[in-house]
Length: 101
Image 1 (cartoon, rainbow, N blue to C red):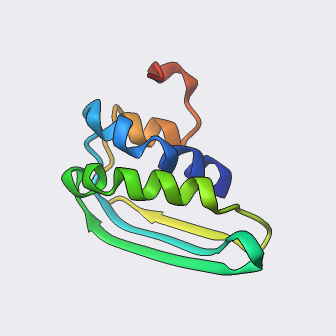
Image 2 (cartoon, one colour):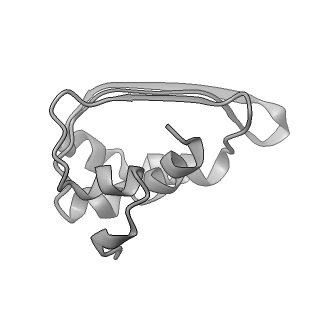
Image 3 (spheres, rainbow, N blue to C red):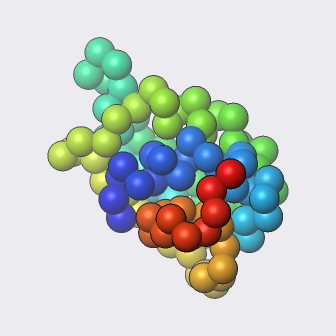
């Protein structure tokens, strides 16, 4: 997964899940995101339901504005039952046809 696409999607999590995104993230692992001052951040979410993602929206949006993905960054996402119509998954795939708000 492209770290830049994920950061763009994280900025919009609250909006996307507010618009009815249905994806439950079995795992979402972000490793070695670069913070200001060359600090690094690792974050792991497990079994994050749409309700959880919506509730974390402001936190994830703020985080996405503070961090940068670089050559050391790794991103792993597992979704057990993907819904190809889900606006969050479309955002992760860089699908511009899903009508951004």
